[in-house]
Every structure is written in C-alpha cells, then in structure tokens.
Amino acid sequence: MGGRSGRRSILASGLVVTLGSVLPSISGGLLWIAASRILGEEGVGLASSIVSAGFMAAYLASLGLDMAIVRNLVRLGASAITTSIAVALPLALLVSSGVSSILSGKIPGRHILLIYIFSASFILSFLLLWGVVGARRSIEYTKITLASSTVKVLAGLGLAILYGPTGIVAGFIAGSIVSATLALVVLSGVLRPSTRLFEVEIVMDGLSNYPNVLAGSLAANIGTVLAVLASDTLSDVGVFYLSLTISLLAGSFAYSLAYVAVSYQAREAYRDIARYAIFAGAVVAPALAVEPGLAYKVLGVHGDPRIMSLLAISIVGYSSLYMAVSLLNTRRDRIRLVVVGLSRLALLIILSVAFRSYGTFGVAAAYTLSIYLSLLASGISWLVWHTMQALAGFSVGTAIGILLHGGPFASVLAASSASLAVMVGIGLVGIDEIRRIVGVLASRLAG
Image 1: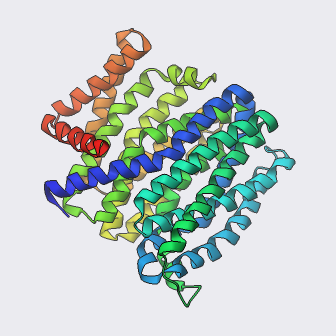
Image 2: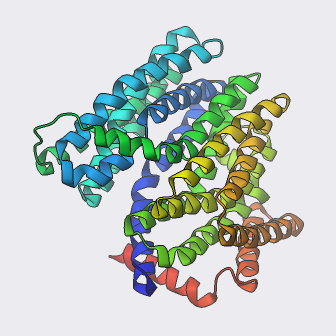
Image 3: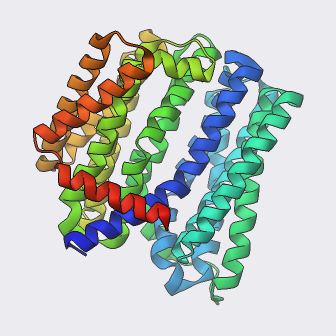
C-alpha cells in the first residue's frame, strides 16, 4: 500500500495500536510511581528486579512465536496457539531457573519463586494476546489490555500496602492472568478447530523472527538485569528501571508505527512513516533531557539526572531502530535482521561490562550507544540521515531549553518547540505534513 491513503491508514492504525499497546506501560508507570511513594527506592528496586527478571525469561522463551501466531492463525487455527504454548511455557520455566541462579546473590531466596510465576503467566498472556491480534480482533485487544491494566494497578497497589514489594509483583501477575483469560475467551469464539495440536511450521516461523525479539523487547530487561549486577544497591536499579520505562513510553508511537507498517507491507510509504516516527521521538526527547529532575520529582525518587538525560538521547535512535527492523521484516531480509539484533544485544552486554565501574549510569550509556551502533548495522543510509537530522533538532532544542533558565515547564516547552522548528527548517518534516498528521490523529480520536 502506498500513496497518501496508505500513509493515512498506517498513521490512523498506528494510533489505535499505540493506545492499546501503551496501556500496560502507562498502568505500569502509574503503579511504579505509586509504589515508589509506598515502598521507597529500595522496595521498588527489589520489585523491579523481579519483574525485569521475569520479563527477561519470558521474552527469551518466546522464540519469536508472537509473529508466527499472527502470520498463521487464520490458516492453521488453534494449532498456532497450542504449538506456541507447548514450546514457550516449559522453556520460560527453564530460563527462569537460569535467570534466578544469576540473580540469586542480589534477590533474596524467598522471592525467587515469583520469577517463575511471573514469567509463566506473562508468556501465556503474551501469546494469547497476539492470537487476538492474529484473529483480527483489535477492538477486543484494546479492551483486554484496558481491563488487565486496571487489575494490575488496583491489585498491585492494594497488595503493596499489605505485602510490600512482593505485592507489586503480584499485581503484574494478576494483570497477566486476567489478560490471558479474556484473550482465551475471545479466541474460543473465533478459532477454527484443528486436528493437529503441534505444527513444526509455527516453530520455524518463530525462530526466523527471534533476532527481532531479542533486539527489541528483550534489550530493556537485559539492561535492568545488568543494572542489578552493576549497582551497589537495589534503589539505584529502581531509579534506572523507572527512567527506562519513561524513555520507552516516549518512543511507543514509533514502536507501534513500525509494527503497523509491517502488517500493511507498505514499502512505498516507509520513508514518510519513518520520518514521522523519528520526528515524534525528537519532539518529546528534549523535554526529558532538559528537565530530568522534573521526572524524578513526579516519580518521588532521588536519581542521577544524567541517567534520564542519556536515556532521553536514546529515544531518537530507538524510534529509528524500530523503523529499520520494521523495514527489514517487510523486505524479508532475515540475515540483516540477525545482524542488527545480535549486534544490539552484544553491544549492550559488552559495553555494560566495560562501563561497569560507572554503575547504572554506565548501563544507561551502554543501552544508548548500543541502539545507535546497531542502527548503523542496518545499512539503511537514508534512515541514518533522517536520524542525524532529528538529532540536530534534539541538540538545538535541548541547548535552548537549558539556556533559557525559565521554570521547568517553560524550559520543556521551549526545548520541544525549538526541536520541532529545527526539524522543519532542515526538511525532516514540512508544516503541511504536520497538519496532515495532526488531522489524521484528531479524526481517529474523534471517531
């Protein structure tokens, strides 16, 4: 699909996907903000360490089966789901054992079981929700994420008051259980039965997408696990985790556009969609770079502002990298996907070890550098050029916001506005394009 209608369809669908996909992030952010005030930095550090370990185990065990489900659900029916669960669930428990062993010196033994429970419940929710997407029930998908996010927040806060850090983890688990249950209800009404419970084809399709999973969803959780190993206290890990969550949320529009573009197979529209995604990230990022302390004040924690500033720099690269991964998926360039994915993970680990003496600040630096260096590995020169244009806007906007010496909100507004003006001035986006983007998003919201 190409042309203006294709771009508008992708933008509109991207907004819907964004609204659905950011609900867990928003609810998680609200939960962590409240938890930081209830439990303090040490309690958030312990809870976020357990959650990140569970996410890490689940994503390692997912084997790219989410994309395999979406590709094959209509054709193969229930076997796409049963095959994926049969492979991923036992593997999640096995990986949880390895992750738990690595973190046994940092996480008290009485909390280790939660890593197993968390990873198992999340992998079920993860696969079944992708089944809902594959069944083309996007409205139901959004309703499920809304319901599960609500349960996660309410249960997490209530249990945190009663049981401390383990209550927060229990809230995440409760949200996953609700999500998996509701997704199963939806799928039971739309899936055609299958005579085969296991399809090797599903596993092969999943493995072909595994580098993308490792390059994307897993990297953030590896970063937090590395922060656990690099830091002296769990309170430092808690601040790092909260900062990372904010930066990922800021890049969620680009993330959603990337996956929607794959579903549309919109090769002709990729340059425009990529520009819009990068532009959105470069408008938001300066606000975090200029006033990192404002975010910490809202969160109610005391953190190193350099960490938030570094992660703000990562947002532009994160937006670009996901568009690169999206385009390579559309081109079916599996070799380059492997190169990009493995280079990102290898760089993250190697640089984190190299910067280990700098604690969580070193992990943040490794995370940011790994994104930009792996973007170069994609070999998409025009995307790298647009990234440089966006970084120019980000740099000027951040400098103006810092030099303004106004109040926090004035500095944030000036930084984002200046970044936008620079990107328009150097041709990354045009005024007419911005009007069209706002118009498309406004009409979809109104609808």
